[in-house]
Every structure is written in structure tokens, then in C-alpha cells.
Length: 62
Length: 62
Image (cartoon, rainbow over all chains, first blue to last red; front, side, top):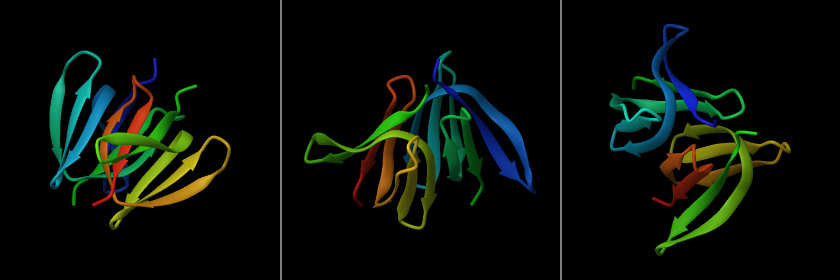
């Protein structure tokens, strides 16, 4: 499977926010995420970096 | 492999912009992309939607 885990970058650390993310839709100042299991979250902040080979999405607060 | 293709959404159509994207880094009003083959591009605009299961990144101009 080709999903990725989303982490929040904070104070030099990465905390798991949502596993197995499928869909991401950035909106005004926030990001809608939905994972393989249908779990949905809205993160207030921005995408810092995505590495698909590492299966990793890094988000951060503004 | 878990890369995705990046498309530009324009006038209801999607045009291929970069194949096999690995890394994406959104910056101020633009997005840095790098693919599996080391090709790098900077797109002026924003991420419209990402679907990892569909291996698809959709970008759009502002």
C-alpha cells in the first residue's frame, strides 16, 4: 500500500498525527486529511514536507 | 514503489507536470518537487489535492 503517516513537527520533534493517510486537501490555513480507514482530521497549519518514498508527511503549525 | 505523479489542474483538465514524485516542499506561494530520478521542479501555485492511493498529486495556479 502506498499511504503515508502524517506527523506534526514541533520543537524539533515529530509526533504521529494520523496513520495511513490517503487523501490530503489543503484549504485556507488548514489541511483536511482522510486515511485508509475512513478516519478524517483537519489540521490547522501547513505542510512542511512530504517524502513519499519514506511514507512520511510532516505538518507544522503556522 | 510509492511515488505519485503530479498534475496541473487547469480549465477542468489535468496535465502531467512531473512523474514519480518523491519529495514535495511547499514554500511561500510555490512548491519544490523532486522525483525518483533526481529531476527537480518548482511550481508556482498550490496543492489542490493529494490522493496517495491513486498515486496522484494535483497542483493548481493561484
